[in-house]
Length: 247
Image (cartoon, rainbow, N blue to C red; front, top):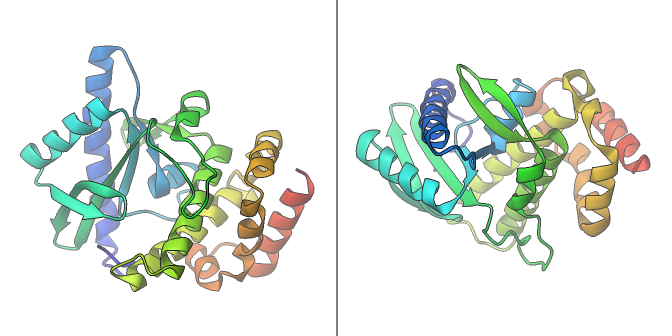
Protein backbone atom coordinates (compact mmCIF):
# COMPACT_ATOMS: atom_id res chain seq x y z
CA UNK A 1 0.00 0.00 0.00
CA UNK A 2 1.25 3.44 -0.91
CA UNK A 3 1.46 6.43 1.43
CA UNK A 4 1.14 9.92 0.00
CA UNK A 5 4.77 11.00 0.53
CA UNK A 6 5.61 9.52 -2.84
CA UNK A 7 7.69 10.14 -5.91
CA UNK A 8 5.38 12.35 -8.01
CA UNK A 9 6.18 10.30 -11.10
CA UNK A 10 3.79 7.64 -9.76
CA UNK A 11 0.85 9.93 -10.60
CA UNK A 12 1.62 10.03 -14.31
CA UNK A 13 2.27 6.29 -14.34
CA UNK A 14 -1.15 5.77 -12.79
CA UNK A 15 -2.67 8.03 -15.43
CA UNK A 16 -0.96 5.91 -18.11
CA UNK A 17 -2.50 2.79 -16.57
CA UNK A 18 -5.90 4.44 -16.35
CA UNK A 19 -5.85 5.39 -20.03
CA UNK A 20 -4.95 1.80 -20.98
CA UNK A 21 -7.76 0.42 -18.82
CA UNK A 22 -10.33 2.86 -20.19
CA UNK A 23 -9.41 1.97 -23.76
CA UNK A 24 -9.74 -1.75 -23.01
CA UNK A 25 -13.09 -1.25 -21.28
CA UNK A 26 -14.45 1.00 -24.03
CA UNK A 27 -13.47 -1.40 -26.81
CA UNK A 28 -15.10 -4.30 -24.96
CA UNK A 29 -18.29 -2.43 -24.15
CA UNK A 30 -18.60 -0.98 -27.65
CA UNK A 31 -18.49 -4.51 -29.08
CA UNK A 32 -21.24 -5.54 -26.70
CA UNK A 33 -23.30 -2.38 -27.11
CA UNK A 34 -23.62 -2.02 -23.34
CA UNK A 35 -21.81 0.52 -21.16
CA UNK A 36 -21.53 -0.61 -17.56
CA UNK A 37 -18.21 0.73 -16.29
CA UNK A 38 -17.71 3.97 -14.36
CA UNK A 39 -14.64 5.70 -12.96
CA UNK A 40 -15.02 6.89 -9.36
CA UNK A 41 -12.57 8.01 -6.66
CA UNK A 42 -9.68 10.42 -7.03
CA UNK A 43 -9.29 10.21 -10.80
CA UNK A 44 -12.99 11.06 -11.23
CA UNK A 45 -12.43 14.14 -9.05
CA UNK A 46 -9.45 15.00 -11.28
CA UNK A 47 -11.81 15.04 -14.28
CA UNK A 48 -13.71 17.91 -12.62
CA UNK A 49 -10.73 19.68 -11.04
CA UNK A 50 -7.22 18.73 -12.12
CA UNK A 51 -5.50 20.23 -9.07
CA UNK A 52 -4.89 16.81 -7.48
CA UNK A 53 -3.85 13.63 -9.21
CA UNK A 54 -4.34 10.15 -7.81
CA UNK A 55 -2.52 6.83 -7.50
CA UNK A 56 -5.11 4.10 -7.11
CA UNK A 57 -7.79 3.59 -9.77
CA UNK A 58 -11.38 3.03 -8.61
CA UNK A 59 -13.91 1.44 -10.96
CA UNK A 60 -17.56 0.44 -10.68
CA UNK A 61 -18.69 -2.15 -13.20
CA UNK A 62 -20.56 -5.44 -13.45
CA UNK A 63 -19.17 -8.76 -12.25
CA UNK A 64 -18.47 -10.04 -15.78
CA UNK A 65 -16.38 -7.01 -16.77
CA UNK A 66 -14.61 -7.05 -13.42
CA UNK A 67 -13.58 -10.68 -13.91
CA UNK A 68 -12.45 -10.13 -17.51
CA UNK A 69 -10.53 -6.96 -16.68
CA UNK A 70 -8.75 -8.63 -13.76
CA UNK A 71 -7.72 -11.46 -16.10
CA UNK A 72 -6.46 -8.99 -18.73
CA UNK A 73 -4.45 -7.02 -16.19
CA UNK A 74 -2.86 -10.05 -14.54
CA UNK A 75 -2.13 -11.94 -17.76
CA UNK A 76 -1.09 -9.06 -20.04
CA UNK A 77 -0.15 -5.98 -17.99
CA UNK A 78 1.95 -7.20 -15.07
CA UNK A 79 -0.61 -6.97 -12.27
CA UNK A 80 -0.80 -9.36 -9.32
CA UNK A 81 -3.71 -10.34 -7.03
CA UNK A 82 -3.91 -7.92 -4.12
CA UNK A 83 -5.99 -8.00 -0.93
CA UNK A 84 -6.94 -4.86 0.98
CA UNK A 85 -9.86 -3.65 3.11
CA UNK A 86 -12.09 -3.72 0.03
CA UNK A 87 -11.39 -7.37 -0.77
CA UNK A 88 -9.34 -9.10 -3.44
CA UNK A 89 -8.30 -6.89 -6.33
CA UNK A 90 -5.11 -6.39 -8.36
CA UNK A 91 -2.03 -4.20 -8.03
CA UNK A 92 1.14 -3.41 -9.94
CA UNK A 93 4.54 -2.53 -8.53
CA UNK A 94 6.44 0.20 -10.36
CA UNK A 95 9.79 1.90 -9.80
CA UNK A 96 7.92 4.71 -8.01
CA UNK A 97 5.39 2.79 -5.93
CA UNK A 98 2.37 0.53 -6.12
CA UNK A 99 -0.79 1.14 -8.15
CA UNK A 100 -3.94 -0.60 -6.92
CA UNK A 101 -7.08 -1.10 -9.00
CA UNK A 102 -10.17 -1.20 -6.77
CA UNK A 103 -13.31 -2.74 -8.22
CA UNK A 104 -16.92 -2.49 -7.09
CA UNK A 105 -20.15 -3.48 -8.80
CA UNK A 106 -23.50 -1.75 -8.84
CA UNK A 107 -24.93 -4.76 -7.00
CA UNK A 108 -22.42 -4.62 -4.11
CA UNK A 109 -23.81 -3.85 -0.64
CA UNK A 110 -22.88 -0.25 0.12
CA UNK A 111 -23.50 0.16 3.83
CA UNK A 112 -21.69 2.86 5.72
CA UNK A 113 -19.37 1.06 8.11
CA UNK A 114 -21.00 0.59 11.50
CA UNK A 115 -24.38 1.80 10.24
CA UNK A 116 -27.41 0.41 8.44
CA UNK A 117 -27.65 3.28 5.92
CA UNK A 118 -26.47 2.73 2.36
CA UNK A 119 -25.35 4.76 -0.65
CA UNK A 120 -25.68 2.48 -3.64
CA UNK A 121 -23.36 2.53 -6.64
CA UNK A 122 -26.47 1.72 -8.65
CA UNK A 123 -27.31 5.45 -8.57
CA UNK A 124 -24.54 6.09 -11.11
CA UNK A 125 -26.67 4.56 -13.86
CA UNK A 126 -28.94 7.63 -13.78
CA UNK A 127 -26.43 10.26 -12.69
CA UNK A 128 -23.26 10.21 -14.77
CA UNK A 129 -21.49 12.20 -17.46
CA UNK A 130 -18.94 11.32 -20.12
CA UNK A 131 -15.54 13.03 -20.10
CA UNK A 132 -12.17 12.72 -21.79
CA UNK A 133 -9.18 11.66 -19.71
CA UNK A 134 -6.21 12.09 -21.97
CA UNK A 135 -7.42 10.42 -25.17
CA UNK A 136 -9.84 7.96 -23.60
CA UNK A 137 -13.53 8.35 -22.81
CA UNK A 138 -14.64 7.84 -19.22
CA UNK A 139 -18.04 7.75 -17.56
CA UNK A 140 -17.95 9.38 -14.13
CA UNK A 141 -20.62 10.23 -11.52
CA UNK A 142 -22.07 13.69 -11.86
CA UNK A 143 -20.44 16.09 -9.41
CA UNK A 144 -23.02 15.89 -6.61
CA UNK A 145 -23.11 12.10 -6.56
CA UNK A 146 -19.31 11.97 -6.65
CA UNK A 147 -19.25 14.35 -3.68
CA UNK A 148 -21.50 11.94 -1.79
CA UNK A 149 -19.31 8.97 -2.70
CA UNK A 150 -16.23 10.84 -1.48
CA UNK A 151 -18.02 11.70 1.76
CA UNK A 152 -18.83 8.01 2.19
CA UNK A 153 -15.22 7.05 1.47
CA UNK A 154 -14.01 9.53 4.10
CA UNK A 155 -16.62 8.40 6.63
CA UNK A 156 -15.71 4.72 6.17
CA UNK A 157 -11.99 5.43 6.31
CA UNK A 158 -12.36 7.44 9.52
CA UNK A 159 -14.37 4.56 11.00
CA UNK A 160 -11.62 2.08 10.09
CA UNK A 161 -8.97 4.30 11.69
CA UNK A 162 -10.95 4.83 14.88
CA UNK A 163 -11.78 1.12 15.22
CA UNK A 164 -8.32 -0.25 14.48
CA UNK A 165 -9.29 -1.92 11.20
CA UNK A 166 -6.14 -0.97 9.26
CA UNK A 167 -2.97 -3.03 9.29
CA UNK A 168 -1.15 0.21 8.48
CA UNK A 169 -2.99 3.03 10.21
CA UNK A 170 -0.61 5.72 8.92
CA UNK A 171 -1.44 4.68 5.37
CA UNK A 172 -5.14 4.96 6.21
CA UNK A 173 -4.61 8.43 7.66
CA UNK A 174 -2.80 9.49 4.51
CA UNK A 175 -5.71 8.25 2.39
CA UNK A 176 -8.15 10.17 4.60
CA UNK A 177 -6.20 13.38 4.04
CA UNK A 178 -6.59 12.81 0.28
CA UNK A 179 -10.32 12.02 0.65
CA UNK A 180 -10.96 15.34 2.36
CA UNK A 181 -8.78 17.18 -0.16
CA UNK A 182 -10.85 15.65 -2.97
CA UNK A 183 -14.05 16.86 -1.30
CA UNK A 184 -12.62 20.38 -1.10
CA UNK A 185 -11.67 20.13 -4.79
CA UNK A 186 -15.27 19.28 -5.71
CA UNK A 187 -16.62 22.21 -3.66
CA UNK A 188 -14.16 24.87 -4.86
CA UNK A 189 -16.34 27.50 -6.60
CA UNK A 190 -13.42 28.47 -8.84
CA UNK A 191 -13.38 24.94 -10.26
CA UNK A 192 -17.07 24.20 -10.81
CA UNK A 193 -18.17 23.89 -7.20
CA UNK A 194 -21.26 25.99 -7.87
CA UNK A 195 -22.60 23.17 -10.07
CA UNK A 196 -23.73 21.14 -7.04
CA UNK A 197 -27.35 19.95 -7.42
CA UNK A 198 -28.84 21.41 -4.23
CA UNK A 199 -32.13 19.52 -4.49
CA UNK A 200 -30.46 16.16 -4.91
CA UNK A 201 -27.86 16.83 -2.22
CA UNK A 202 -30.57 18.01 0.16
CA UNK A 203 -32.62 14.87 -0.41
CA UNK A 204 -29.62 12.60 0.16
CA UNK A 205 -28.46 14.42 3.29
CA UNK A 206 -31.99 14.19 4.66
CA UNK A 207 -31.62 10.40 4.36
CA UNK A 208 -28.00 10.44 5.57
CA UNK A 209 -28.18 13.21 8.15
CA UNK A 210 -24.97 12.10 9.89
CA UNK A 211 -23.05 13.21 6.77
CA UNK A 212 -23.95 16.84 7.47
CA UNK A 213 -21.81 16.74 10.59
CA UNK A 214 -19.09 14.95 8.66
CA UNK A 215 -19.16 17.73 6.06
CA UNK A 216 -18.95 20.49 8.67
CA UNK A 217 -15.74 19.00 10.11
CA UNK A 218 -13.82 19.50 6.84
CA UNK A 219 -12.61 23.05 7.69
CA UNK A 220 -10.74 21.46 10.61
CA UNK A 221 -8.78 19.18 8.26
CA UNK A 222 -5.74 21.43 7.96
CA UNK A 223 -3.56 18.81 6.25
CA UNK A 224 -6.21 18.33 3.56
CA UNK A 225 -6.62 22.08 3.03
CA UNK A 226 -2.86 22.38 2.61
CA UNK A 227 -2.80 19.40 0.28
CA UNK A 228 -5.44 20.98 -1.96
CA UNK A 229 -3.66 24.31 -1.65
CA UNK A 230 -6.03 26.66 -3.48
CA UNK A 231 -8.42 27.86 -0.77
CA UNK A 232 -7.98 28.47 2.95
CA UNK A 233 -9.77 27.25 6.05
CA UNK A 234 -12.05 30.30 6.34
CA UNK A 235 -13.13 30.09 2.71
CA UNK A 236 -13.94 26.37 2.83
CA UNK A 237 -15.88 26.96 6.05
CA UNK A 238 -17.94 29.68 4.33
CA UNK A 239 -18.51 27.44 1.29
CA UNK A 240 -19.80 24.56 3.41
CA UNK A 241 -21.93 26.74 5.69
CA UNK A 242 -23.51 28.43 2.66
CA UNK A 243 -24.11 25.08 0.98
CA UNK A 244 -25.79 23.58 4.04
CA UNK A 245 -27.94 26.70 4.53
CA UNK A 246 -29.37 26.26 1.03
CA UNK A 247 -30.49 22.63 1.35
